[in-house]
Length: 99
Image (cartoon, rainbow, N blue to C red; front, side, top):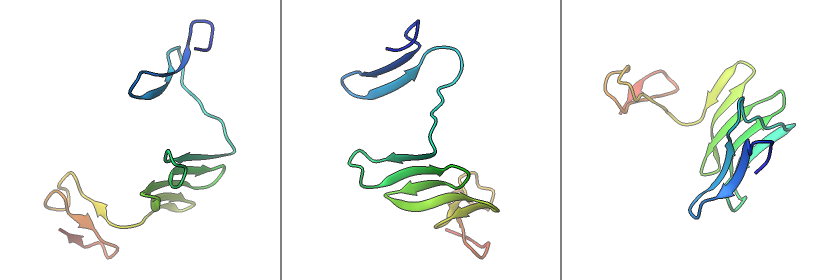
């Protein structure tokens, strides 16, 4: 426990490990570049580059990344709210909805 009133706690409850901010305000992490990797440290899960892209991965493969012009999606964009027609459709690079 850290802080005057145990505001920041790092602990393991027998099942999970926790970093818990219990005070007022936010938990802020400062880094030039940031990586969140799997437990074996063999695959990225999230990366953030100072002044650059934020990238999300699935099984170590890039799926979503911010760019200077917007975002880049690798794979399909699934419609979970039925706005393309039926729930579960994917929007392709041509703009066509496919099941």
